[in-house]
Amino acid sequence: MSEITALMAPFDTQALLDEVKNWVEIETPTGEDAKVNCLLDKIESDAKVATARTKRFPGRNRYGDKLIVSSPWGGEDPGILVVSHVDTVHPVGTLTTTLPFRIEGDSAYGPGIYDMKGGAVIAFLALLHLIRNGEATKLPIRHLFVPDEESGSPTSRDLIEEEARRARYVLVTEPARDGGKIVTSRRGKTASFELKVTGRASHVLKPAAGRSAVRELARHILDIEEMSDYEKGLILNVGIIGGGTSCSIIPDSAFASVEMFASDVALADKVIERIRSLKSYSTDVAVEVTTQVGGRPGYEKSPQIEALFERARACAAELGFVLEGVNGAIGSDANFTAQFAPTLDGMGPDGDGAHSHNERILIPSLVPRAMLLLRLFQTLA
Ligand SMILES: [Zn+2]
Image (cartoon, rainbow, N blue to C red; front, side, top):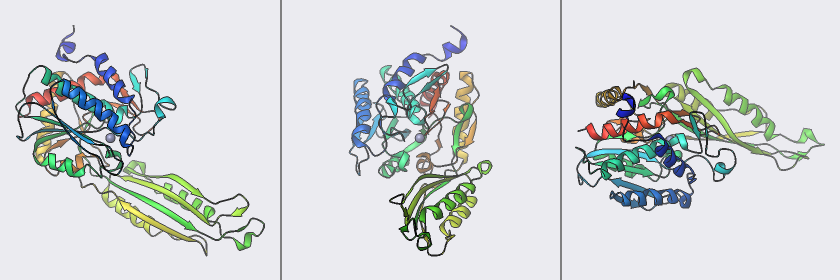
């Protein structure tokens, strides 16, 4: 056994990967409460077998339940809060069609494997390892699983904040960034826009009488996407469009749903204003824009977060790897917890392709990331 392998005990790559596969193979799209609860049932039952304490909170509005798995020690004292979301953006059936669980080289693919089942599994197994070994840590550990992060955590924000208020430290198991970087701030802003275009219907053979809403929308689709500035971290995606009723009628209605992600808040505000005040290109065609701006507060790198990051970096150095921090842009549940307790995010395994049909984790990062979480549990005081 090499020195580094010895340092990485007690975790075994194959065992971690097997459990990641078990979680991935229970599909859990946001907003499908029965599906999400299937995975929570499994987590709750595994936690009970390991003699962890569990507390479950019923879901609402079609979102699944919430679950807290706690160490048997430490009672209600302030402790370490781990936050994981069990929902994914992938609809049921993704697993059997576009993104089956599979291994290719060093990568394991599957819906939600990177965002964030990989991270949730390794943190959960690190906690169960401590419990099974009867190895009480200085601080109690509470692992909170939420069902709705991909929708902005509408039904779990209160619980996340309540738990963060009594936490000394918070670790969020979102995916690591390129090369295994963890996230120490998230300044980003998001917004979504609904465009509704209303023109005038007419038979296709009487074009002068009609005002095409589809044609009008097409111009705005190009305009909006061209506002993207990838170098500045500004992304605009026209994700859903529709319009018209028949190929022989000039369409009098069309719509589009647009999502914006920005790491620069000032730039984001400018773009939001531009889209809000879109003007119609054609006379007698109305363009209506409804805007919803993301509701997550900023997550800034405070001196306390810097200190917690230095702790994590020291643990990583002991384990034989270099840990870097990065601004994660765009929000996560870390934006809620960081208001109340020092928070590190991006604690999950390295990989790529979140929210795509190319979603994957790097298998060799599983054990080092599990060890990093375990060492933080063991040493934070
Ligand atoms: Zn996520």
